[in-house]
Length: 144
Image (tube, rainbow, N blue to C red; front, side, top):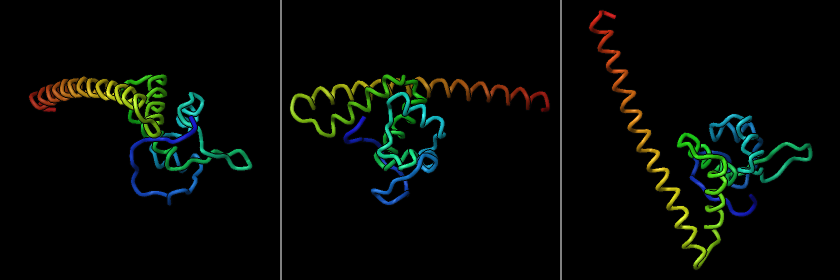
């Protein structure tokens, strides 16, 4: 997906415009090299450049895309949904008029889905914490 890439901000890192190899990109985003390669094969990320030797090179915009994907993964979004959201974000960066409204509607649907999934995860976490607390109480009761 060439063109403008939208996404979240990162913490301190290389200077703007500086390119990094896959190992540094993986460390910065908190993904494995293997995962980044998988996302490239799936068409979610395309390194902005390659060295003469064929090594992948990434810039801040590439890291932003990887961060979007990383944040979607625990919410159960499919690769296709991730690709669709990245396409929407790319298009929004350059859209105007009627196209912009449609893109914002699509982005809103992603937001609604993410919010619903976060609520579900919170409920599951609360049940898991309650269960762990029950087990702790049984251990304490039985002298464990």
